[in-house]
Image (cartoon, rainbow, N blue to C red; front, side, top):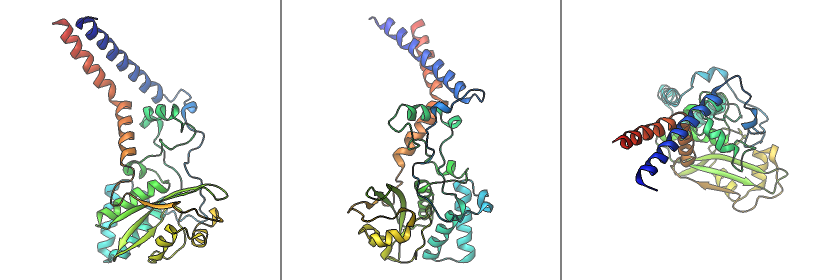
Length: 281
């Protein structure tokens, strides 16, 4: 194949991809077509129940990280909260800000993510579709464990408090329990935080996290009575991502899919025009 033929083939390919991306965008943006086939059967990754919700609809105006952080810092300054009280306030704030309900990225906002999800092994759940963008999540009233943990940890970073992620993967219960929560360092002690499932416990008790990490079954059952277990295997609860965004890679992947959904056609069309110009010379 000559250089001219190669350039011509790549040119045609880029033009074809550009047209395909534009048609896909128009197809998935259409409100006249049924897109139910590409949605997962289950909208929630985890099904753990909450007996009582502390949702406060009056906090709906906190619909961006900028507004949330500003409100959080203003309240801390107004009430002159110390570090531990600031952590308690953040915990209560997110318990009241969100329902326990997954916020998926909507099809119209990222169609390529849905296409990827449809052809993946997770096509029947929302593992890839569950938003990892705090600003996007805050546009809605629902958020599950990892989503709330991301936002809580962002608040901790704002006030300079160290944090970690606490992960649960308990498979020997009556029903599997997967969960995501946080831990914060206050006065030299790591404290357990779960704004999502809203368990009842003394947040200031520094032994809670240690006992959970040591597979304390009685403590777990008292905190999560809807998910009681006979035994917790060693290593089923662990720490991760100290002072780091635990969903960094997932967030980047969703952003790449967003770029493909809206702007990739421009990239391929630009390459087409460049090659077209070269082939004319």
